[in-house]
Amino acid sequence: MFKIKKLLYICIFLFVVILIHRNNLQAYLNEKKEMPYQAEYSSFNMAITLKVGMGLSYLLNLNNAKSKTVFFSGLGFAFHLKDPFSIDFSSNFQLKGGQGTLQDYNLKYFSFLLSGKIRIIEHLHLLLGPELAILHSASVNGRDVTQYTNKQDFSIVFGMSYYFLIGRDRLVFDFLIDVGLLNTIKQNHPYTKLEVYNRSAYVTVGWEFSL
Image (cartoon, rainbow, N blue to C red):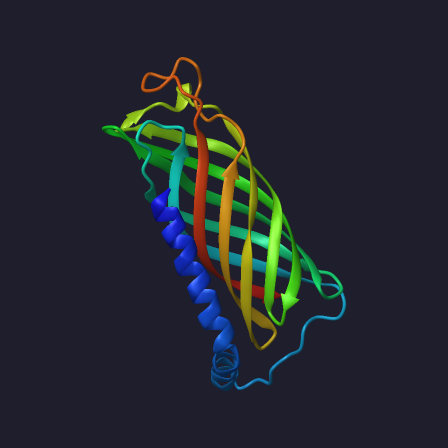
C-alpha cells in the first residue's frame, strides 16, 4: 500500500511538472511535427488509441500484503463529444496480483473499460468508469491456481489524463487507479481462505490516432 501511495505522489508531481511546462512541450512537439497547434475539439469525432504502461498492484486483506510491479496494454476507441466531454472504450491486457507471507500472486486479466472524461483545464481531463475483467490465468509461487480463482472481477477506475496535440493526433499520458470490488479467491483456494480484492495503480502512455 505504501508503494502505491508513493506512486500516487510521484504521478501528481509529474502532472504538475507537465502542467507548468505544457506550453514549452507543446511548442516543441509542434515544431518537430511542423504542424500548427490545434484547439480543443468543438464537435463529435472519433479516434483509435494504443496504450502501454506499468504500475503497482496489491491484494487487499492478504496477510502482510505488499505491492508488486505490474504491466498494462490496451487498444480502444475515444469518442470526443462536444467540449468538455468525451467517452473512452478500451480492451486491455493487465497484470495484477500482489505479495504476501512467502507468497507471490500473479493474476492476468483481459479487461474492458468504459470511462467518461471531463476537461477541467486545457488538455487535462478527469476520468471515471466501470471495468469488467475476465481472468486469463492465475498463479502463486509459479503454481497454477486458475481453477481456484474467480473468473470475473468488476472494478471502478478513476484518474487523470493529459495529452499533447501532434498534428491531428494526440500523445496521451494517463494515471489510473483500479479498485476491484469482487473477491478474487474461491473458498477452496489452497493458499488463503480470506476474501482478497485487487488494487492497482498504472501510469500509461498512448497514441491517439484521429479518424
